[in-house]
Image 1 (spheres, rainbow, N blue to C red):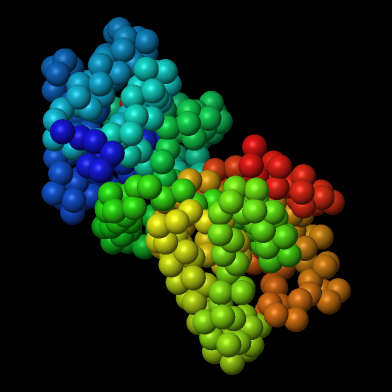
Image 2 (image 1 turned 45 degrees about the vertical axis):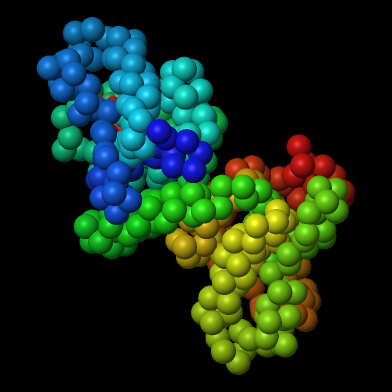
Length: 347
Ligand code: S3P
């Protein structure tokens, strides 16, 4: 029987995010059965998805899809399910996906990128005509529903746009499988992670949030210094930025795998690596403390910090979409009192 320790795994996300191929590979790796809901609907009705849409209309298709998902998730054997991109529009399905016996992974990418990937598939009548425009609209409409059901978020665009497709899909399937394994082992974890650029106030806010929750506070810079006897700035200078980022990633992974809940002020770099982004999906809450990049760059140029390496302003900009992709919430920090920022984090 599927339960919180052996959950069904449901991949949700818009068309073109690779739910079917990544799900199939993850199911193989996890030795679980696999169901693609579009394929199951076609097998059940003996008709194509396009035919159901065109002759019976979208509401009928949604009803069949919701029934199919309910049925698959009532199976005793924990199953990997690739859900159609619109499955989350049905409230009953969202409720089912939020149950504790279901681990739901939201695959994301920019609409224009997805549009470039969906051209050849015939089962997507909604995307006839103007795929970029439609995917943009659907992304906005469905975002709150994906957010509502997702236990973890995987941004697929970087892998799919930089690596040959088979390798990228295998890598993403590995990430999903790892997430499921971590979830099984560590299902009681309750960490709150603060992400964002250097100087956004993660330490100050993190300490306030931790003391209000009665959690331990883990600060990446302090932890780096405790482990090596050197500041982040010194490590960057002597060993290079890559070595520092690797160490910062290890600090995050260790903090996340501790069994007592903590508030973690993570290093700005942890979102650069897909392993870091994957691991963040395991936290209860990932809050992006968002500061205006220009203000941050000015502050850093005007003196910066003696324990952190200098920051490259273009890197701050480049990381913004990565922070957005991992964050469960975003709090603006410019000219806001840290106590008020902490209130917002806790809200
Ligand atoms: C749909 C997505 C499709 C398919 C149908 C409707 C949607 O599945 O269910 O065309 O509403 O987004 P994929 O997500 O597999 O493309």
